[in-house]
Image (cartoon, rainbow over all chains, first blue to last red; front, side, top):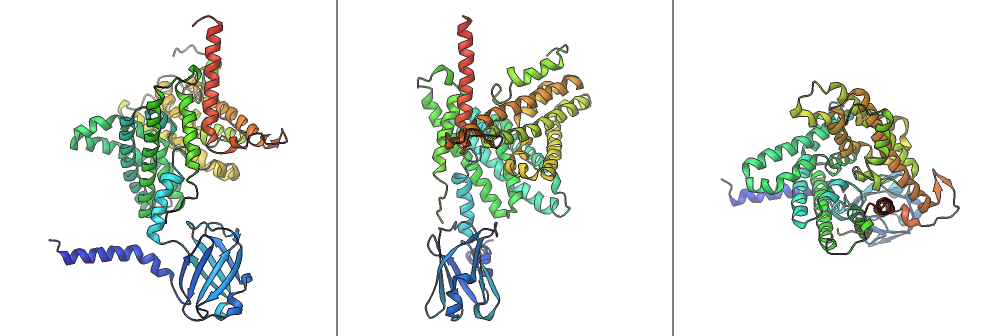
Length: 314
Length: 205
């Protein structure tokens, strides 16, 4: 039986697990490093450091982790609190969603001190979710799943059902693909089979959801079952495993990406169906009836979603 | 679909009367997503052509040994195999073009058009006809991509195939990703308009 004290330890263990990546980063001379403002990185040292070295901006090289060739320009470096705290000001705003790598030359007699600055892990995970949901919405900014998108966004009810089924299948198949990718494809060097394995897994998931839903909840199956067939021939669903394999996401990141992608698809379908219901009442020129006007509405949505780029919540 | 169709008819049908992008409205994702230049269209068109032709032929060869109940998974795996082939070939020999197309090459595996042609044509017809049908559909897709890419590149960056033609950039908007929807929508409307105009001039409606 699960007692209250047991639960507490489990919660603590889970918290420790989540926070572990944060703890590992702080080591040695550097105690803490955070993004302060849009264009500022704050670094705390364990002891006072040499002012002449620390305030010379030529001693710093800063770049975003994926592209080490693009150096970010440090405008000024200021020491405070008796040499224990340093603030780096940058000429241009930083993309704080990315991990930044900072290298300091000659600090405290060490030739090169390198550390990384990134958001907290939970924030980063939510960043992935928000990014897949809004900033990189799979329909409006990545242009995936358009066949189904235009096919099923006529009525709100259909759109909602479709979106829910998609999210479900996407999360399940993404997690399965992650396991397959990390424990079978990578260890046995079978990466070239990616596409075959992923499409097989997706079809399998769809079939499984179909069978289970039919037995467990026939009412739900009757309302959602028809969409399941459409799910297989859709690029949104196969795109998620491919993206996670490309970016080497871990299981939490995979879950967040799949959830965000599914939620984004649901959102797109719902928005589009709301407009479609109104359009049925509108007087549309005969040449634009049907698909053309849907495309133009989708284009307007896509432009609106461009506004989300650069959105940062955490 | 009678057997007396000549290879030429099958190809023209794919390009004109059953064009995958404008007429069947399938495989829209790349048509909107990466049709910013003519070159992208040609490259993805080649990839789709390859996959379509080879999958059609493969299914047409093995159509008698595929059990009807597992035909859809069989199609999917066949397509996935050929997509893997073209994916690896492009990544190895044309890394630059491959990088531009990004994930869309791998996503050919989920193109409705290819599965549809296998289901509707290749599993019933002879190997020879399937080859021409696949070629026609692939070419139709390529033509659609190139036409969209032509307009977007010309209007967006004033160039064709990377060569500066106009000398200025008329509407930078067209190179932006969201313009893909507008261009495809407007082109569909244009084709509809031609059709309606044609019917009216013939006095059909």
